[in-house]
Image 1 (spheres, one colour):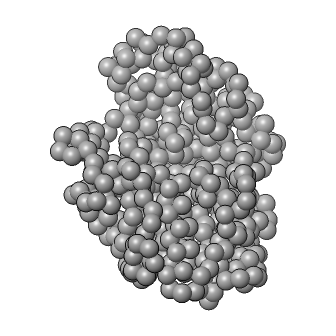
Image 2: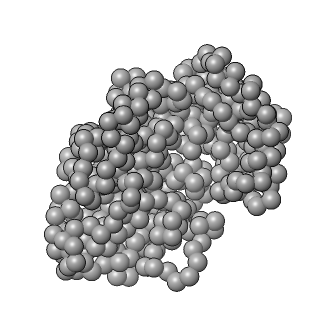
Image 3: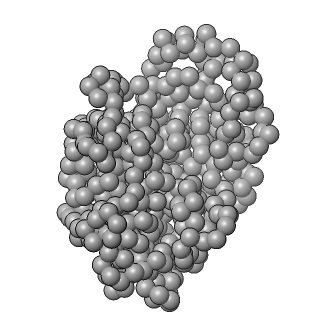
Length: 440
C-alpha cells in the first residue's frame, strides 16, 4: 500500500467540498456523461501519490482507472515533475512546422528504438484522436501520392479510435454515430462470437474469415485499422495469431496495417506494445495515453520511410498537410522521455505481465456469481463482464463506495490500474472487487 502524503491530505482538508461540487455542477460540462446528472457520487480529486488519489473530503481511493487510462507511472512521480519543470524553464514549446526543439528528436529516436525495425519516422501530436485523424489522412494521401487512390477503411464495429469526426466514423459503437454525410467508406466487422469467446483459439478462423470477406469484398481498402485489444468495445481480448493473420491479409491486398496502440502501448498489456504478443510489424502505429503518463497531452504516430517518402509527391505541399498548434509540445516530449526512462528503470512492462496474471487469478472466482458472464484480462487490463449493463454500473458504484475506482464500459467493469501498482495493491484490488460484487 502506498503511503499517505500528509501534505496532500492537508490540501484536501482545506477544500470546501460543498462549494467545489456546486461550482462543478453549475459550470462544468462533463464529457460522456448524461446532461443533468447530479454528480453526487462523482469524486472530485485534489491529489494523488503512486496508484492512489484523494478527493475533496480527504478520502483515499485505489485508482483502477489510471486517471483516463493513461497514468502509466502513477501520480506525483518526482522524475516526471522534474522533467516538466526543467523543460519549462528552457523552452515551453516551438512550432514543429517552423522549427524544432531538442525533446522532439529525443522522443522520436526513443520510439524508433522501441518499435520494430523500419518504423523510424514519427509525427508528434496531442491526443489519440488526433493520431487517428493523422493516420487516416496519411493512409488516404499515401495511395494518392503513389498514383493508386484508395479510400476505404476496414475496422472492427466494436472498435474505438477517438472522438473527433473521423475517429468516430471508424467506430460502429452506437455512442459514436456521426452527423452528416460519411467522409469516406468504412467497412466495419462485427465480432463473430460473443465478447467472452473471442480470445478462444476456435474463434481465430471465424474472425479472420470475417476480415477476409471485408477486405476482399469491394474496392481495395487503403488500410485495415484495429486495436490490439478492444478497449471501449468491452475490454475484448483478441485470439493469439489474429494480428499475424491480419498482417498476411494486408500483404495480400496491399492495404496498410494501422495498429492503434493508444490504450495498449507502453506496457499496459504486459508487453511494450500490444501487437508484440503476435510479433507483427504494422505500417503505421498510433500511440498516446501511457506515453506521457497523463502528466501532459502527447500522442505519436510512427510509420515507415516508404510511407513518409511518398509525400514528396504531394501536389500542393510536397509533405503532410496536417498538424496542430501544440502538437509535439516540448514539455510533453521531455516528460515522455522521462516516462520511458521510468518504465525501463522500474521494469514496469514485466511487472504489468506478472501482476496482471495475479489480478486475473484473483478475479476468476467471480465467475461463480450468477450476474457475471466472463472474467478476462491481458497485462494490467482486467474485465469483469456482466449479463446486464445496469449490473456492471452497480458493481462500479459499489467498488467506489469501498474505495476503489473502476471503469464501467457497457456490460463490463474494467480494472486498469497504473503500472506502478504493487502486489499489495493487486491483492486489495481483487479483494475489494469481490466484496463489491457481494454488495450488489
